[in-house]
Image 1 (cartoon, rainbow, N blue to C red):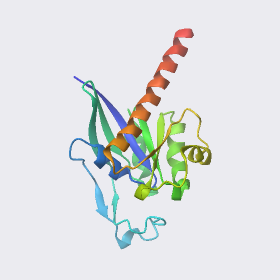
Image 2: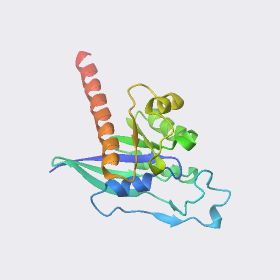
Image 3: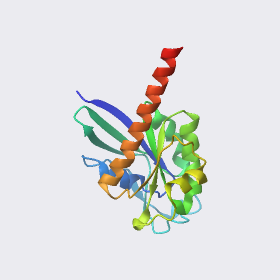
Length: 189
């Protein structure tokens, strides 16, 4: 039996979480998207994503086999503040998370980063280069988000399967390094 690991795909509203789960999943992803209606006016901030017509209202779910002995179960979180009550439940048992960021709206990344830092859950920042463009380098994003040097920042296009896999592999390496460091410190104690 392969080892199954739970990974969260998180980030602000409209950053590409559903797209990432869909692009990399080897099974038809479970999507809980609903049309954005007038009821969300004044509730959901569409600034910077005015063309968005659907939104995740619970979670997205997908699966990818990294190696015969390793399967990742991907849980895409909802991005709107009103659905944040689900995040603690979704994070239970997670090995780590990908925080997707949009350089046009980097401030929307802080809440997700804070969430994982406070819970000591390893994460990688995937900078979604919309329309094949990225106006900032990984180091510029790292500085703007005030990230530790051991937090990977990966430029990606979440529409592309290989690009999304690269972000997931960076996360797995980060989680592996954290587990190794933890084991080393407990051995020396």
